[in-house]
Length: 310
Image 1 (cartoon, one colour):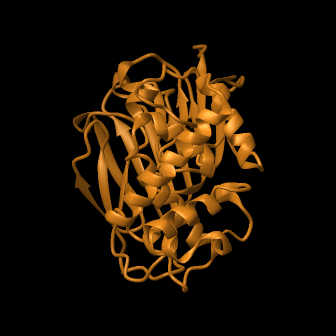
Image 2 (cartoon, helix red, strand yellow; image 1 turned 120 degrees about the vertical axis):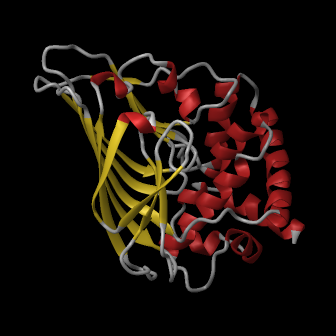
């Protein structure tokens, strides 16, 4: 199986990688088994499972191989060139090495990915992915509020719970949380961000589309840290973010669109975004990949470090 996995991974990295058309036809039988892809999966579900599994495997590689592996398969938002060699060239420029060195790293990464795929089980994916996450942040009031609206697509039968985490850092004692619709909310500990389990009224089946919304209200103005930084654990088609600032304050806002942040990297600067005359920004991210950073930052609090968020 190991040799088959190596061969199939090398086939997958050709062309556009995971973004190739008719991607299901490029996934060999050994790789499909390692990703939990079955004959009942359509092309969308197959790609979701492939991207999720590859991402979790790449995260287990030595850090010096991760960038090359992500780029080789097209798992970086900024690196979606149509040819494998073009992505190799991009990595070579990024790490100041020649293309031959990058190709060696990719080959080494493929060997290790095959071993990991053959010897480790996929994380429990929960059988769903996000079609759209819409977030609205209101900072122009004494108690800032955040509204998160999810639309998820169910990929397997019998899904009876959905785990998620807020897209902004806050101490749980500093925020009131209210589920507006979509089921019953249960809390779970999740470090510096509130984590929850959403239990729908009835178990969901393959193909269902489920919507739910949560409102967060901070206990005081300073409870809201100056950022919304999202590192998805599963593929997400659309992440829509709106932030409304206080009218009389100018802001320097930085946006992050699919940034790969490694421990050895400097803090990424992001791209500067203008606040409109109404005091708002509107960002829309598409085809989010697991493990990459998306969102905005408008302050320098340590908890809003892009490296910490990732």
